[in-house]
Amino acid sequence: MIFSFYSESQIWIDSIKQVQENLDEPIEIISFVRFYSAGCELINSEVYVNEPENKIDVINCYGVGPLDTICPSVDTIILPNLSPGEYQLDLIVNVYESSSPNLNCNNFLYSDTSGVNVIVEDVNSIQHKNEYYFTIKLVQNPVYELIDFQIQVKNAGNYWINIYDSLGRRIKTEKLNLQSNSNNSIQVNFKEFVSGIYYYNLESRSRITEVEKFIKF
Image 1 (cartoon, rainbow, N blue to C red):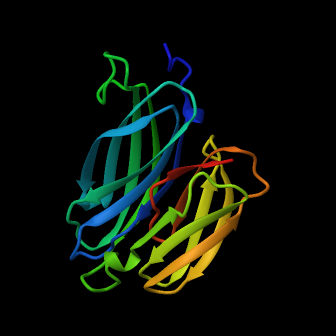
Image 2 (cartoon, helix red, strand yellow):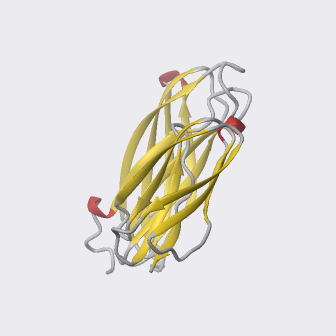
Image 3 (tube, helix red, strand yellow):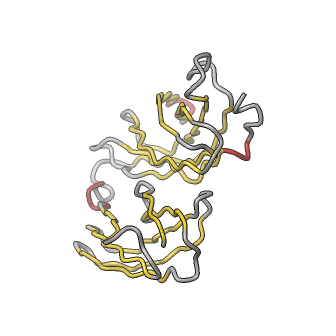
């Protein structure tokens, strides 16, 4: 069986970030999970709220492929309406092999859990979600010694370009301080790294973009 040796070392819950904190818009949670797998897909997501105990359980079920390389998954979870306060959110990741007819979200092979605090503020107490909007893309792919990124941001502040190797390990981070409502051409020196497949994303203090793949020649 492909997943007979599947264990905690094959799944990483890297981060869980809260995007929206106001009561006037849905609260989003961004999760960044990696699997030691040739493929990964979020099949089902369920949210359970216990307001008397200020507790939220998010159960994400993933179908994955054979153990081959690293598959990153960045997923958005929409929380229901919540009363103001601080909540303990636990992200529970259940994993099963997609190709097995006997496995599914109710009959999975492995599960892992990671927690984060969620703060819900009153209406208009903080900035709106769209003020955190930003995007990142490569000018060309494949790349050579230099990587050219085009970054658009709506909100001024600190941002980080993260680069990962084919095993999902973060190998380089570039910190940026960007102005509001700006288009930015950013060049990153990648000369010291060998040819191969890599991944990148852009991160702020409150959100993270999906992971994208690029090739270095």
